[in-house]
Amino acid sequence: MNEFAPLLGILAALTVGVISPGPSFVMVARMAVASSRSHALGAALGMGAGGVLFGAAALLGLQGVFHAVPALYVALKVAGGLYLCYLGFLIFRGASQPLAIGGGEGQIGGSRRSFWLGLTTQVSNPKTAIVYASVFAAFLPAKFSLGFALTLLVVVFLVEAGWYALVGLLLSSARPQQAYLSYKTWVDRAAGGVMMALGLKLISSARES
Image (tube, rainbow, N blue to C red; front, side, top):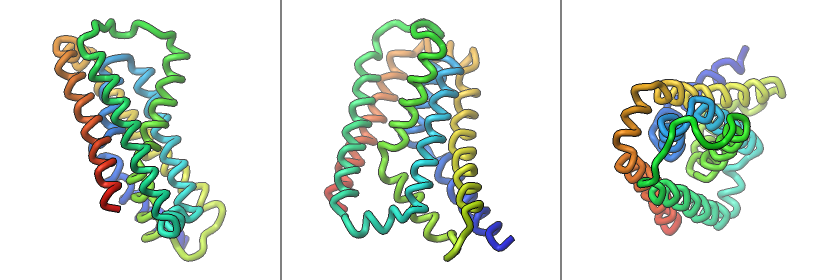
């Protein structure tokens, strides 16, 4: 029972962090309007899996590792920023290419690819790792059971995957998709530009670390 309050605290803090706009939101939102609902949900599951990886790392003392080896955090920032810039460039470059909603890859293969894209987008931002490490450090009890740790990771997955699944479901409906098709070039350029800007911001912040 004494582990219930820390669990609620972590749940509340992570929920606030998850719904804050960032590269993960940009990726899932664009995938929902540009591709299909199944692809968006695949990406949402990838986001959830990435959250579980961050949660497990935080339970194992990720913050202590970053404090002990600051260069590792800087390297992760640079690598993550470059990856976001790469994704943004791909979106920007393909802005003028025509798109047929629901076409292209098969549903299973496409959803699997969307899962990995969601996962890699999530883990490419080491600031998210710091958020998890800080939240866990603030709320975790000094001693906790294995059951608490497993429950916490399930909660992390549900928060991350649940939020992005909601985004995917809302934006993959007919009206948002038709609006996207009407303004695809500008939407993709904006999404690609935002993604690249977030990547550059992450790289520049590495110099301040």
